[in-house]
Length: 410
Image (cartoon, rainbow, N blue to C red; front, side):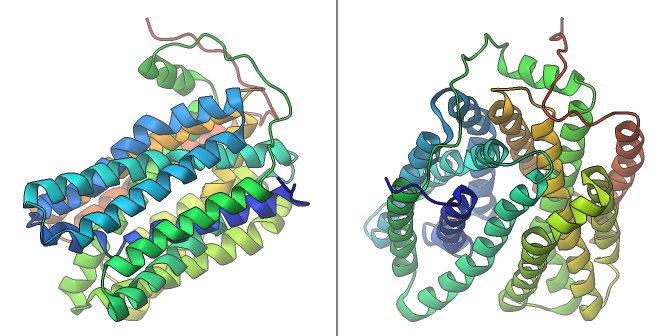
């Protein structure tokens, strides 16, 4: 292995290439399911399956990375992505020969596997925590967020172009090939970041562990803020195409353009501005500012015109760009030695749970009431989070690397 001079740069490349491969699947997934006669609930069920697998696997990857190192976990998850993407491609190639139930079942297997492998965000964040100082940690987390944002911009754009020119199979096999290249690059360039082995302490069950984390002053507040932010953003993602189709008659191309625009805003904030802003204002102030921006953006969307829709999405993306690295940095600073991967894994699991709840609530409220309902309700959640979370965080100091012990329930 050739050790990279800058481990953050190597990690950025690893995460970026991984997310490009994942982003390629996003526009194609519904059409793959429809080829096997899936109902609308069958199509959206693929998203639920992905998030459920992430929910289950994120803390497992995090704890494993605390025990055996970040590099082996990242290599394992990237290797698994090669298999899941190849399974997507092979299933699509054989869609005429496969029975509908078998083809759809294989898509679910691939999607669950992709969710399990994609649950490595906590490990990537723990890697950043290993190689940065507390003062520079938010900037490092911002680089990971920028890699995600760039991947989500580049991946769908590549997917659309390749699918238009060559059909569905080519972009799917391209995604698998990209993951294989990524595995090689990570093997060659990504060094281990964990400096010393830490014996894994005896731990309670999964729900007890989550409850224990929620009871820790400061940490529990941050985890609940993460739950509120992720639920709100995923509600928007699920219902935005319906909103602009009903209001403006926009199709998939226009929706993709708006999401690409928001991805660019996200990359600018997380990749270029977050370090300077953190040094000037601090992580707590940026986190609360980001919550406010997301709330205002959500409240704007159901009433804005076409130009105002871009403004609302810019606010949402900028708010998310402020929140994610600041929140990740604060969470890592509340984790003790040998616990960063585990705590960030719990946070990633809560994010996956929120991505199950958010789309479900968005669809239900949109159907039962009207198109403003999901946006206004989630804006209300963020307003409550801003008031309660801001008050709680102001009462607390920000430890650099300590977490208090809280008793498990019962």
